[in-house]
Length: 373
Image 1: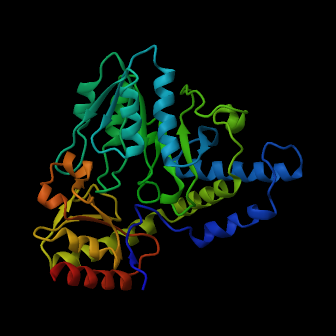
Image 2: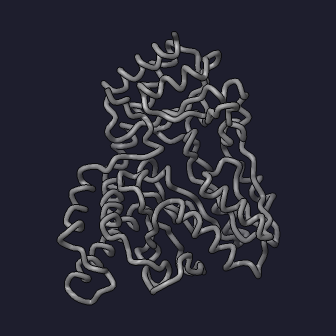
Image 3: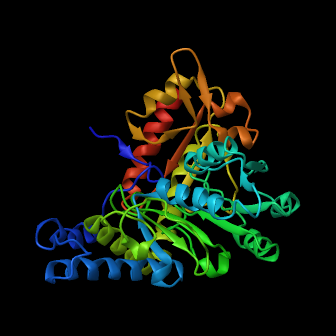
């Protein structure tokens, strides 16, 4: 029997509406979008449509969107290219202690290239204090990169407030919105960001495709060198098939945002109510300013082996990686100062579009049975 899937923050399935619009681009519409003949024109039109669909989702202009291979490339492009573009202005980059490795590792790399990386701490709920960000800004600050919502705890960061601070000090601002798109409103004008990263496989589109929002007027050199694809901003023949899928996924997310929010939260809260009524547990993350689908729980006095065995029944994510001779605790939980004895027994559950009440009922019974034994 397949485990019940409650790991939608890790990856989402390609939904039927998305798969259906992709199918013709496997064989019928195979042209190179840079070609001027009929076949190329069909592909070019499909890309233009997808660009419009994503622009509508985040409230920007279509020409402010470039397509990438996913969230990791988008984050790398935003941060590394911003560092290169602004090297004559300064060398300081501000980020947070709870970033995804696709941001954290880029900053670590840049620290070895002469850049000064300032890491802002978070509170017990995993939230950055905008005042800490402002205090860290100097005349050498060239970029702020703070994620929109955390992938582990779901805590939503005060991006709008940080955006106003960035604008006040004329500092470029990037946010990784891979987890928030399709779950909460993402409006680049309200957020005040200059760069925003998108990952397709978190949005019911395929893996291997993403996008980067670049506000008009934001100078950013090419991340990949070659021909003049994507308005000469990202070389490489476009992945038409998956771009079409990402565009449709963005359209569905925009159309069904409120319905999805209500469903995600209902399923999440039902799971929490069932588990917490039977097993002592600690909720990690903000109580209210949290993604509607994310439930991060620590279980005191539970053997870590019980956590591992649970994953054969319920597909979820652990708060710690177990090795042959050690246990590595999530840096996010460490940054939140979750005690080690709790952090090692942490599970992140994340609900999705396809989660049903019946699945939640069954999952809760399995979790309670496994962790109570």
